[in-house]
Length: 133
Length: 207
Image (cartoon, rainbow over all chains, first blue to last red; front, side, top):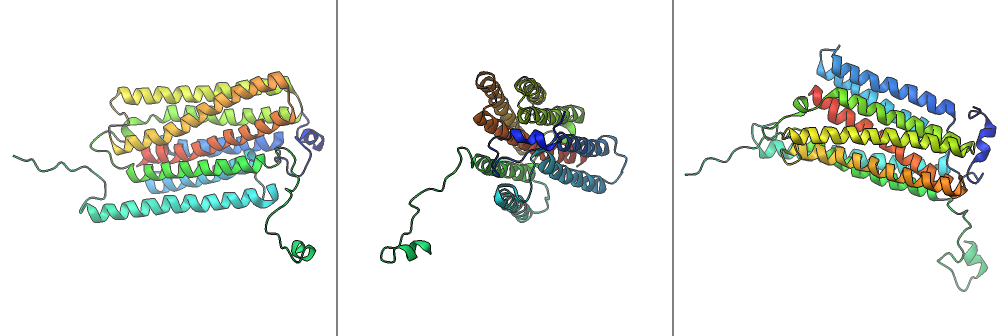
């Protein structure tokens, strides 16, 4: 398998600089191994619970997810800052900003409302209406 | 600037001739932008799940419902299908049509296994009385995970279509472009699944 060598890249769709970025066998295998490690760690932490504190466990699980997302972007999606004259990166960053606003904004508003609308309840539990005669 | 210098009397505010683009030259970026819009769809579904995830309405919660063994199995299927698609793309670059088709078939089988396990999980939940109508948490859960599963299912349909295309026409430039787009789609779905198993399953069971 000579996928890691430059000659393997000559079979690109057009040979122009706008062609989709390619990965090599090395990229895919590195990405796969990293992804497996970053998947096994959080599953092990939650299923076996070697760390008592749920807070620390959740923090490590989230860190692994973030790291694995980056691994996928680099090794599977082959994102580079120069791909598509930088438009790939710009559109991605724009999307990430929108995603953060959507998620953080929605949760902020909903939990804020929750706290104001339902006194004494941090959780949204349905309260049975008072029994009417 | 040059347009006004050329014809000082009649400035032009529009493009007379399109710049030359190779056919399909902008497909990659265009498809990426589609994926980013899809990313926003998932972001909204995640936000809904985050807002409703604690609304159990007295019903079962994540800890009572989710079997992490099943989720680990599913995650493995999807991750393996991701790298087998990578192998298919390497075969495409090498111009090896039979090898491309073999790896695409393997990818499709792992994708189908993923969907099968997910459907089993859904039917199990609904059978236990934990269907989407049970509580806000379950509605959000079925919407989010179901949308992802639907994406994978359509990805499999697309994959089968491309296998027929490659079988009939070979690895022509258009088919290479299509295979590249599907590879982005497929890896993107695996990326979304990282968010699903982390936020919905792992953190749900932890809570």
